[in-house]
View 1 (cartoon, rainbow, N blue to C red):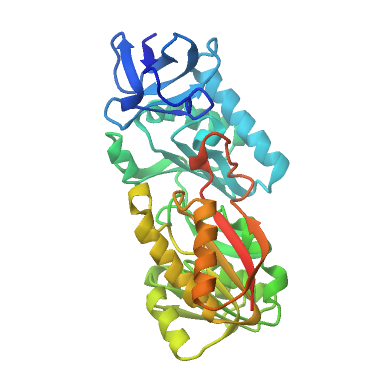
View 2: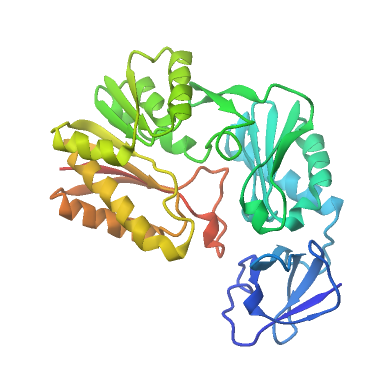
Length: 390
């Protein structure tokens, strides 16, 4: 096996459990290799660290798959990992619809698998994991026994790895469109063309957390996408909900979801730019019992954190001003680089500028089927606050 030796003096991030080895952290590579090959990693004192797949075309040169020197990366390896991941979900969440594999957090870097009813939606996002796709699909079929498996590899991330974008059927020939049940609410999931794998499962438990604060209130849901938070608010007893999104396709799907749950009379859907509408609503003096802000990631790079910070602060400042005294701001960020302490500081500044007092009711992260792997901070990306506003 090809042996990779790390430079002397680099931080012990990798030895402490982080699964990524960057090119500039490597001193020497002994042996010939091709993209996707499994290599062994050692520190500068020749101490074994782990084994993983290598891709010289990626900034992340190696992604570690095991810390056990004797463990082979073969079909049995994938069967153990996938079975372990499935048993974990079966113990903690309703597996009718859930995330089955969460990449590095399940020690399967580059692999994402979501389950929607009897169908699996799969992403193999890195060159190394792509080499094992057939084996992975075979084992998923054996362990979970889905009626169909759909490939959602239409992500630009693959191109950074030297892979082409693609999507299509890997098992069965089914209608890639289904209706899931989330906390008692029915939601359409477009496995073929929906965001990411088809639907955002990571906020499932957070959507349930708004139950007690929306009852009998007026709610503004910005960046509503296909209406999940808005419909939860209506389902939990809100008097009236206004849901905003810039995507006409998302709004049309949200309307279908509302009709599916007989909630269309309680939710007004607005297709527009949430930044502009927040300003407009504030200037017109509108007030709500609850304002929900669940925007897409404002940055996927540490270099753009300053501009992302300004964006988050603007929407949260305006959101705070739209909350009636004693009401609630529900606010989230799915930008990894908007670290929890930075997000919290931004909210403090926004409250100060808005001349509002805020009390923390609850802080949450992503759902249990998206576990946070300690020493791999990238697996913790979602921050979710419920704040009482005065």
